[in-house]
Length: 349
Ligand code: SAM
Ligand code: DTB
Ligand code: SF4
Image 1 (tube, rainbow, N blue to C red):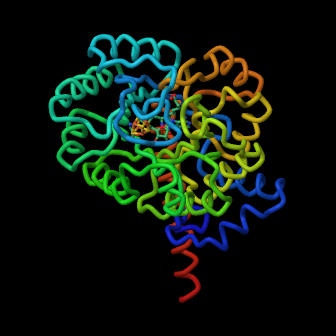
Image 2 (cartoon, rainbow, N blue to C red):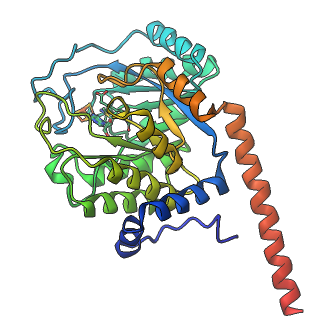
């Protein structure tokens, strides 16, 4: 295999620290170079999020508007009816989204919820959209059931480093998260897993989170990097801002460590101007959430994103173009491998 396409799962702190320590322009150049080896540099994948069950969550994630433990200003809602979810999915498709991601404020789905959730997956899939869900922890049986229904991706974030984790969540462990990711993988679904920065963590925690993600084997197909959305009423509402350049560096390092993954410029875009978002794309981000709402927080309006994409000459990825890219990559890798074995053959003969 060529050096460019080798995916490493043995990253160490010192080498990742060295990437963070590069002069900004050097880091951007390195990330953009790797990005271009694997993706069309002017294409961004777009997903739309929908909260299918909002608030009253028993977990204590200190950043979250939906935890029942904090007094936040959100409208709690029971599990949505399947036809309302499908209506929202159709709208997302009409606006150009290719993936529909359904999120629920659950610790984990209850057995009684599974039939409705399965119908949502089948219905969204039938509209011609890629399907994604984020419902909390999954057992292996639940993962199998969702995969059989046609779920393409499951989102479950590691959120932060193992070292900082207990400062943020106490109601489930880091290992619980890794177990869910392993159940998702074993069921044959694609993994969407990333984290949040700006939680008041140290620089070392951001390095450690990215290493955890990159050392998953296989690496997650999709890696959302969220900038904390500070929610009034949560314990993290007043945490100090993370410097925007540090955020861009996180995106660039994620791109370098996970060359073939879609890196998503995820929550927090409402607080970022066009120039900041453009630097994130230059650093290798190639996916966003499209639509004016995330789960409960604001996101830029779709037409603002369209204007920005036009200014930057960015096209949105179609499902077909993602498949073609996958094919092209396989062809490129096969050609490079062939060249290498020819070289080896010539060298030894
Ligand atoms: N309840 C499920 C769970 O936590 O596994 C699924 C939904 S949960 C809202 C999905 C992810 O959204 C969290 O793991 C976290 O990474 C991200 N998130 C939630 N609130 C956030 C906030 N205020 N700022 C940034 N990211 C946030
Ligand atoms: C992810 O990494 N970010 C999305 C999605 N996965 C589910 C959620 C962001 C939530 C932002 C805060 C809110 O809307 O409440
Ligand atoms: Fe619940 Fe998910 Fe929010 Fe944690 S992040 S409180 S599990 S909705």
